[in-house]
Length: 368
Image (cartoon, rainbow, N blue to C red; front, side, top):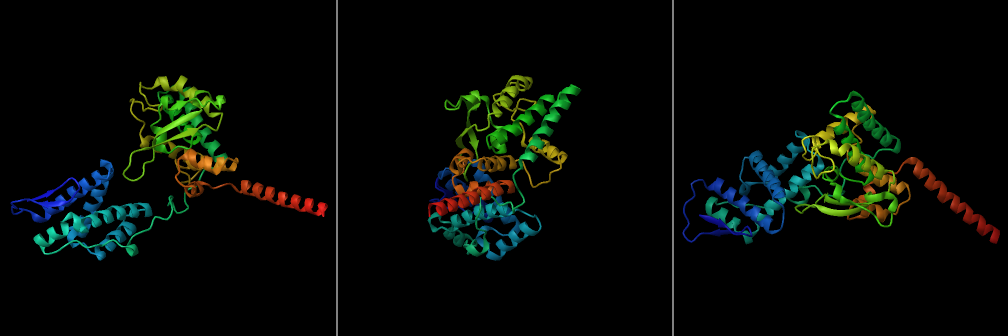
């Protein structure tokens, strides 16, 4: 018999009994111990189970239990993930992070698994994840340069297409009018406050309040984002976002007064037709339809609304630190990755700098 304490350490019982299926039972106990270790670190159950599933996937692919894993098995596993399954770099790195943490856990003598495996199998786990066979996380955005923000013209075309869908449904008097109205408003609110898809899905009317320093926005001058992107294993990160586009308040008010009452009662600002949280798949399908209809390809995604928000604020001259705080980035370098200012903006910036240099030179010349 074996036991695992709350910190994930193996503890032999006082009267050990032979294991009926030592390999399966030891592997299961390793996973249970690793779960306990991660719970003690405050990680969420969802994060833990995703990591456990990756460990089980490597075990099945390698055909060996963790105490027999080798560097060659790891290399073959990830070569297959890249060449056959076409996993993205971020996915590969996530897998390697999970597997590396598990490998470190079972190799740490403090947890007792090395001694246990030697006792049972005359073998033991070894470090198989190293700097030379894992990916480094260099950038926060790993899209290979294929994802970009909307231009202002493209963004307007997207919103116009969404409004056309609302008008068409209204003329036909179809029951899809409220859903089209909801999605049109949702897309605009995503841009208005620089929100991720999951953040805008979870919005509730109570999340909006007045900004006492900007009364022109009415009761939609301040937004408390309660479901911000979490760091690994942590809860959702909250942040406060100030409204910057005065035209946005009217759009939200119109939805709350005319569209929202037509959907089932819910605390959510953008519920589904069943009164539940609107599904990501539904939003994705709507977005892809509109994107195709206005002639754009997959270089722009739902997340491009957030990228556009950052880019347009920078182009409009807002302080980069303010923009960073609005979107909830810990580092300015992350906000810089999101920024893709237009060639027109760069031209105007260069012209302004050159004109300033010439003016300064003329002043010096006249003073001389």
